[in-house]
Length: 246
Length: 233
Image 1 (cartoon, each protein chain N blue to C red):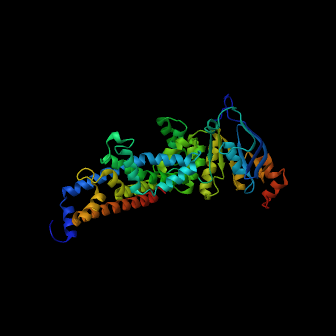
Image 2 (spheres, chains in turn green, orange):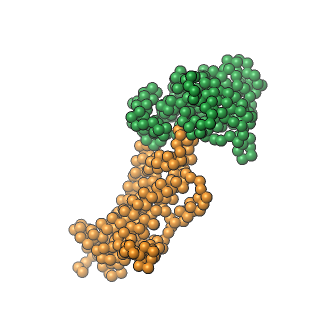
Image 3 (cartoon, rainbow over the protein chains, first blue to last red):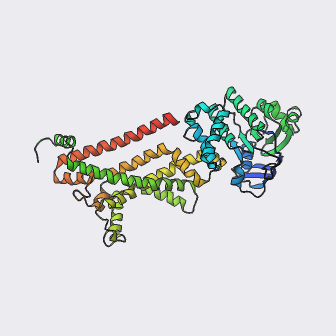
C-alpha cells in the first residue's frame, strides 16, 4: 500500500481554497488542509457541515467550483487517481450477485486479471470473515455483513487512501466494532484513512487527527488529543459539549 | 365441415395435434420469438445508452421512444410494406410476403417497448449505483453491462411484454405477410380469416392456444419477478 520511497506516491494531498457551490448556495468555502501519507483523519461536524461533500470532492466524484485538490502525483487523470483510492459509503451499494462476485467485479473494473482477481477477492473475504457467505446474494446479507463486504471490496483494491462516509451510522454495536477493527486493519496495512462520523466515542477511539467542519468551513485541523482536550475553536468546544452548533 | 359444437371441435383439433393448427402455431412462435430476440439484442443496450449518456436531442429521443411504444401495428406494417414493396427502396430484396418481412415488422413494434423500458430501469438503477460505480473506476460505457445484468429481472418482464405484443398483433403481419396459407399464415391472421369465412372451430382452437400462450408468458414474468425479489433482494 503506501510506500514513502515510491516516486509516484499519491500522498500528501494538498487542498487549497476549495469551494463548492450548488444552485447559488455555497456549501463549502475556503477549505485548506494537507493530508500526510500516514494516519487516520476523522471528519467531525454537525449535519450539513460539508463532511460528505468534502470527501466526494477529494475522491473525484464531484468537481470543485473553486480551489484546488492536488495529489502528490501531479498531472494524472481523475480516473487514474481514483483507481488508487477507495470509498465506503454510509449505505453500501452492492450488485445483485454473490458476495465474491461483487468483489471480483470491482477488481475487473480496475483491470485485474481473472485468476489474480479471484485470489485477491477470496483473500479479502477471508480477512473480513465473509468466506462462508461467498456465494450468498449480496443484497440479502444483513446490514453489518453488507458493510463488511463493502470494506472487503475496498480492501481487495489495495487503495493508498480510503474514504469512509459515516460507515457505522446504520449499524448495531457489534457491526460497528467490526467496522472499527477493519479501519485499524487498513491503517496497519499502511492505507491512509479519512472517515466521517457522528459518534464522538468512535472518533476518540480512531482519530490521529481531526478535521472539524462547520457551515461549510474548515475550523480546525488538530491532533486528536488536542482536539478532544482543548478544541481551538468555540464552535468545536460547543460541539463537543453537545450544544447545538451550525 | 363436421356439424356440432365448435368448442368441442376446437378442443379436438388441439388434442389431436392437427397438422394445420401446429404449422400455424409453429410459424407464429418462430416469427415472434425471432423478432423479440432481435429487438432485445438491439433495444436493451440502446435503452441503457440513452439512460447513461447526455447528448443533444436526448429529450426528443426519450419522448420519441415512449411515443413509439404505442405505434399502431398497421402503421408499422404499412411502413415496412412501403420499404419492401417492388417500388420501394429495398424492393429488390424480394422479402415482401415472406416470414422475414413479418419478423422485420414485429421487431419494429417490439423494439420501442424494450428500449423504453430498458431506458427507464437502467436510469433508475444508475441513480442508485452511480457514485459507487464511479468510485470503483467504472466508465459509463463499462457500466452498461453491469446495470443491464443487475436489472435483469425487471428487463425480462419487459421482454416478455414485447413478446405478448408481437404474438397478439394482427395488422403488421397481415400487411407484410399477406396471410398466405402454409407460408405466412400465423395465429392472429388465421383467426381473422377463418372467423370471416365461418370456420369457427379452427379460429377458436387458435384463439385458445393464443390465449394460453399469452397467459403463460404473463405468469412466467410474474413468477420470475417474485422469485428474484425473494432470492436476490
